Length: 269
Image (cartoon, rainbow, N blue to C red; front, side, top):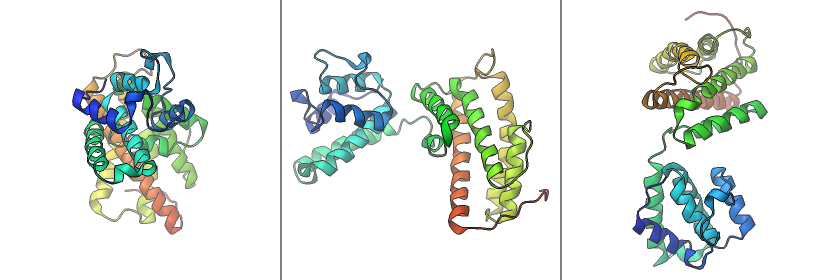
């Protein structure tokens, strides 16, 4: 649950005009669509029902039940909508209240457990990827990264294999994750996309990290009947892997934008 204070909730309710039971200018339909787009949550589910079941009461219940980073994400989106739709928030005294509410949302967003989590959905391609991304996101939304380690491993495996196939890198179906990544790093090096020695070293070190990830998946995740890894180490793994995916995604975007020619080979490190 979020840790919004009484004063913070009072300011938010005032900005969003919730004393009437409404939220801004949303209808029931547009309110539901907005929250689904922002957080993936269905605001009309029974768990968000409170007293009259009005939009304002449902939003209050949402604040109560959802974790800080989810509430913060919704607040940021609501504030952006408010800024675009209501002129009074762009001038005093509405602007001061808007600013205070924005600071509230930013405070909540500082509690995002995995900083690069959005990259998982961004690189998801096709139904299998999307299903995995959804499972991974649900684990993080519940602040339970240890329950998503096996899905993260599968997602990373599929993503790296997709990149290898994209660049014509021949890999066998039984090649493990770290070996796939090693083949891909060879390609990056030969294509001249890595400018600094330090970046190359970091990427090379990721090969051994992903090799260890294989062991975590097999021995410390829900992939099998295992005792799952502790929360802190699971969170560290999530942040490390998603950060690597973010960097690789950026390199891929650079390759596509520059139209660099592919030169695939087996040159060793």
